[in-house]
Image 1 (cartoon, helix red, strand yellow):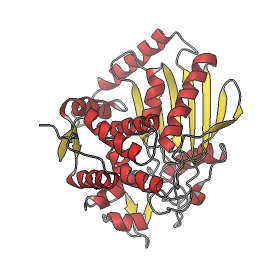
Image 2: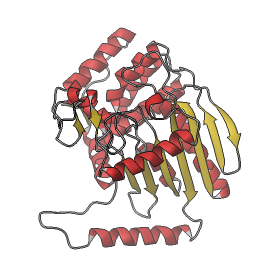
Image 3: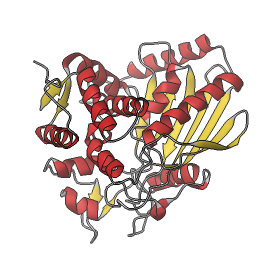
Image 4: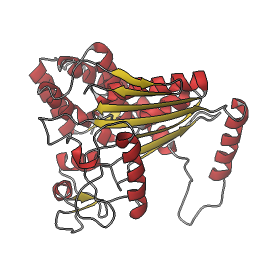
Length: 352
């Protein structure tokens, strides 16, 4: 692994995106988002996505301009038609609108259709928490998981994230796929020629597998068995049936379909944290509960109890100081894309 400073890596990714046809505003939004995912340790949703994003932009499958319009709006809600623009750009606009509405009237609900891959949901819920709001964010994804008891892919990884503002240094930010693992982690394992743990996926003939290629050809498993399936059903409903986006098997594949748009959906629910109690009182109660949780008696072999998002928070702080680890394979990918776009890379030197 080579370590690269956050600002340097963000600039490099931004130049790649502008070289691929995005304007400066979008390139900045997306590069900051991808690098934040790496900072949080969610490498599957970080800069590893840059090659497939660039390929889709090059082939014209995604609208390079950030075109979108609101098709239906109330004081508390808005439905956005994303017009096939970049998913991270659309979702960033969507969460900002939801927070704005929540600030004005108490609650903000925003749905997005005709969107694309929106990256790491924690980035959006964290934004809401920074603005003293409680939030829930969901998005659907191309089919990789069967409904519980089935053998045919129907649901995607269908992640869900929530955030809660606190009075301390760290807000509570939770983000999970409703599959045992995000598909991007398996894609990244295949790129880096690594095996995957048993329990992440099964092969197309129903065998447990540690081979990422077999996993990608087979099925991802729901987290918690039927419970994960139940959560995935809710995510699908809010992301697609509610917004008008494509659902399940009708979503275009991010990695394998370079002819059709994805038509992914996103959904954000945001509310001011002071709706029922004064903000300081609410935050103090969250802080008190957090301290009590961290102080309870631990299981044998457990040194510390973490709050939701605390591991990612501490990783972000460490990597901001010491640089983000980038694999040799990822460096080769960034260099190859840069060469293709005529971007000089001498300025993007590693730490030390």
